[in-house]
Image 1 (cartoon, rainbow, N blue to C red):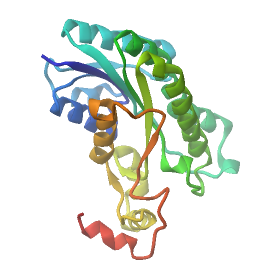
Image 2 (image 1 turned 45 degrees about the vertical axis):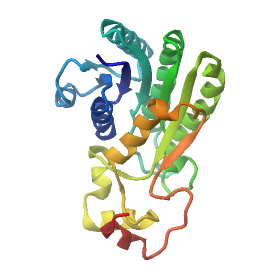
Image 3 (image 1 turned 120 degrees about the vertical axis):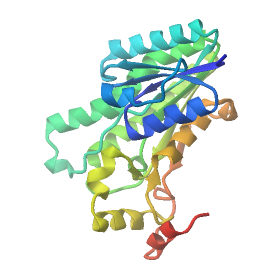
Image 4 (image 1 turned 180 degrees about the vertical axis):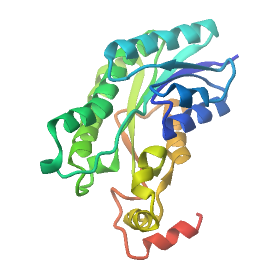
Length: 260
């Protein structure tokens, strides 16, 4: 019998699918929510996974997903214990080239979805006896990267939301944290890493000399959702190969051929 049930928004994405796998591997159950029904159908089958299609920018849809996760937990005799928002986008343009509708889309996908999850999940987790929420930021929120104005603004908002919500819901036993990846190999980032030259340039930006893998970010999120992170709240954890905090060097790209 599963003891914990988690809701994953954006489960049809690269990191989302890996998070579902990681949670299942440790014995948890997952309500996987996303817009791509075909990708959701590719998640592991079994009574420990339920899928739900919808748009996380729609507050009513997220509220419905939280209710479904709570019902899923009750049906299993388990607890609704956590939720993660992994919905996002990548728009690399300077501010003067970013159309107003592009900015609104970036804010909707990256910030509004996170707010919708906190709004719906935090009270439900409090009623369930406590739990954890993990949101998705980016190294671009704290490290100035050219042509990242829209996404940096959205993700900085996510980090502010994380800290404020952590303060609001701590008395209810609800922890709120964020992870801030660098560039990660996912279907979403394929157009950035699709040529040897662009991949090499991206690798060289990261002090560890390579871009990240989706499962590396997913395992950090799973850790924050689990009991191991029970004394952590209001934090943004960098999972970025050192991008936001460590100076890179011309030799950094050589590191991708070595394992630690």
